[in-house]
Amino acid sequence: MLNKILAAASLTLTIALSACQTAGPTTLACRAPTGEEFEIFRAVISRDRDTLIRLSADGPARTAMERRDPYVAGHLWGNQGYTGGTLVGVLTQPPPCVIDMPRRIDAEGNVIASQRSIAVYQEDRFRALTGGSITFAPEEAVRLPGVARQDYFRCDLVQTGQGWRMTDLCALPTVGRVTG
Image (cartoon, rainbow, N blue to C red; front, side, top):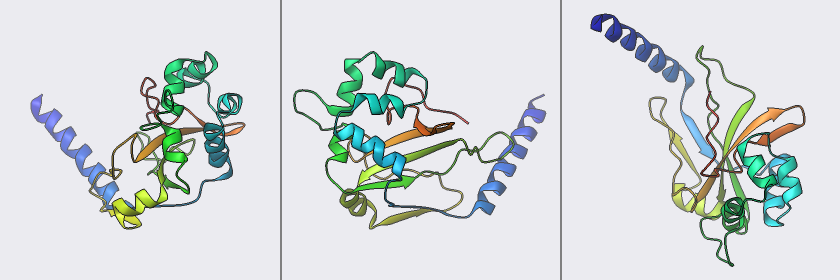
């Protein structure tokens, strides 16, 4: 039985590595926000809860925002004027730098087109950390440079009938990530 498990694990690893090797290197580089992303960022900076709710997919993050959960307010805007470690803290140092994360893959190796993740940096900070871009070899795990909630925020989005919507209010710690 152990031999069958090891053989299956070896085959799975070989398939995964060969899929990675044919995918080529992954380069992370800054781009300007799309219209929908810009609208999210504008809503965060202006504390526009209604727009943030409208641009959020159904789920725990949206429910917390609708309930006016103080934890959400702290995550997005800080507390008593302190914005370190908040999304508004990153966004109020323009221009924003958006990084497209590698797309999720399903069990059959197909790209899940209805889900995506981005990272949001302040452009000068991303350049200081990377020199402008960073490339990972196919066998390397993609790691965002810097410190989460200080240098960048990661945001998960899902495609809906109304367009791309946030699922997690950009890494709200109490909300689970989308898996694929």
